[in-house]
Image (cartoon, rainbow, N blue to C red; front, top):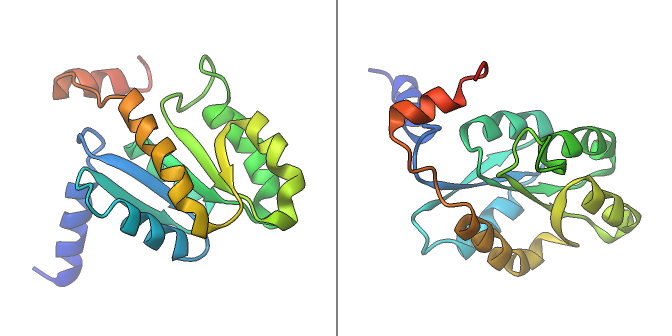
Length: 165
């Protein structure tokens, strides 16, 4: 078995959409935010950090983690897509595609004018820089406490996740 095969097997095992692990999806062009969150949650073995480099990749990760915490670094080039997708993904509890996901954003001071519209679009909490992620950690943990993992048997969880149900 090649190393690539091992990596594929490992990815399959860790991306089980029905696992009880809690997931923080970090969407940023750089590794700083994910590295900071790994340090913050180092003692929490039930929390995994998943890194993505763009919004479509983050959306794909949400399929496997329908109760995740999403941390997005806001870039000017991403604003149109954010304002288009956020209300559909997290906006209203009745119409959101992922009502159990909470979105947190890192919004630099140069984009501060977008903070209120981002909140209105579905962002739960905002910080100005990755260095302040320790401020978001309690909110992320509170989200996980308020959305307990799905305790249904595996077969029931699969049936509930089918798109035609």
